[in-house]
Image 1 (cartoon, rainbow, N blue to C red):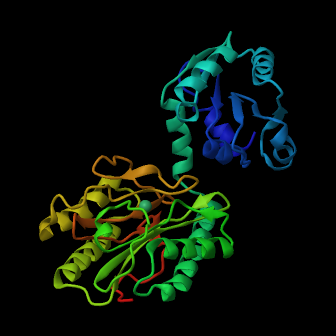
Image 2: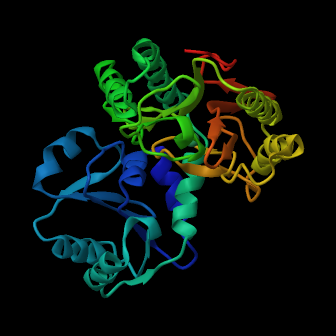
Image 3: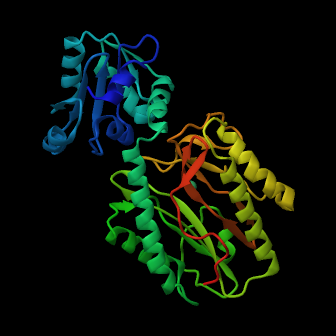
Length: 356
Ligand SMILES: [Mn+2]
C-alpha cells in the first residue's frame, strides 16, 4: 500500500473492516491512477483497484500501492476478494455511488454487510484537505496557465465582441498552453449579467460602461485553479467604482485574516462584515471561499459555517462579491496556500480596477 492508503486503512469507520471507494477524484488521490470507472477495495492490510479491460494496462503501469484486478464481471471479483480476505463489513463511500448503484453494489457484496455513513468520505476529505508541495505545484501551474491565457485574451475584448467568443478564445488558449482542460465552464459575463454569480457566457456584446467578470481556471495533472477578476470596459459610473472598491477592500481584509490556526469562518466574517458595513447587506449571497484541489470545490468551506481550523498547506479561495440584480456585480477571487503566519497567493494578476 502507499502512504495515503495506509493512513485511510487506520481511519475506517467503526465496525468496518474494509471500504469500497468509487468516486473518481478519491480513487485518483489514493492510487494516482485516473479513470472514469473503477473501484478501490481497501482492507486493513491490502488494496485492490478493480478496473475493466479498457483501463487494465494503464492502471498496471500507473497505479501506486494497489493490486490491479481486471474484471469481466465486477460481482465475481468482489465476491472472490471478500472471501479471500474474509471481509465481514464494508464501508461504502457515500459520494461514490448514487442510490441505484449503492443498491446494486450491496447485492454484489453479500455475504459482507455494508455501512453507509459520511464517515469514510470525511476521512478521505481529511487526508486531501492539506496539500503536499507536489499538489500545490500542480495548482500553481494551472494558475500560471490561466493567467497567461487571460493576458493573451484581454486584448481581444472590444466593443461589440460576444461574451461567448471571449470565453471560447480563452478556453482555446488555456488548452493550448498545456492544460488538459478548463477547471469548469468558464464564466465570462458582462453588463447586467455580472449580477449573477454563476452567469453563463452568451450572445451579449461588450458595451462601454460594462463590468466584465472572468471566473476562470485550468486543469493541470488533475488539479484545478480558480481565479476571478472583474474589469471595467470604457467609462463606468461612480456607483460601479464604489462597489468595486468595497469588494477589493473586503477581499484584502479576508486575505489578511488567513493563517494557520484560525477557523475558516473567520475569513468569511471579515470579508462579509466589511461588505455589510459598507451598506451592501443582502448583496453577497454566497460563501467567501472553498478548498481547491482535485475537485474545484472541496473542503474546507470558507463560510459562516466553516468550523475547520485552517492548517498550513490547505489551499483555499477568497472571493467576496457584491451583486445588484438588474444593475451589475463585482467579484474578486484569489486562490491561496495557507501558511503558519499568513498565505502564499497563487494568483498574481493585479486587482486594482483596470479599464479595458
Ligand atoms: Mn471559486
